[in-house]
Amino acid sequence: MLEQVHEHITNELQQGARTDTVFVITAIVFNLLVLGINSAVAAAAADSYRGDASIANDLVMGILIALVILVNAIAIIGLLTGRQTRNKLLRGLLAMYRDNEVDQYYDTTLLTNYNRRYLLFTGIILCLALTAIVVPVIVRFL
Image 1 (spheres, rainbow, N blue to C red):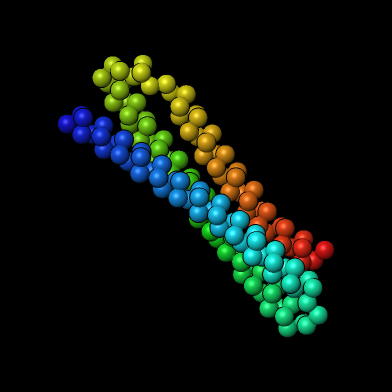
Image 2: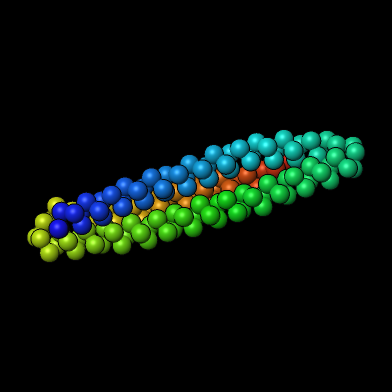
């Protein structure tokens, strides 16, 4: 039974890692894509002599900025949830290892490293999100 519990926990950890990867990659690709689109839209709006075209471009840019905020908030919430889940599962594994006197084979500093990794992923997502918002605004209004 213990082996089945161990297998279940490790499978959950693997699934969580895949899910976290999807959140990170989706956010990065989305931010870069929106950065390019919004920069082009902002440049067109800045160069536009027709008021209607400029308003339409500004609306598109505003909608995409709102979408950047939403998608990145979802990605960050997903990562935070993944971090909490990973911590709970790893604590369970550590307790199981301790109960079976094999805990000396698992370095508990890995928990700190995992948390640091989540923090770095979140930082990357936030930096790209800010870039996807700020650069087009600068292109449009300066």
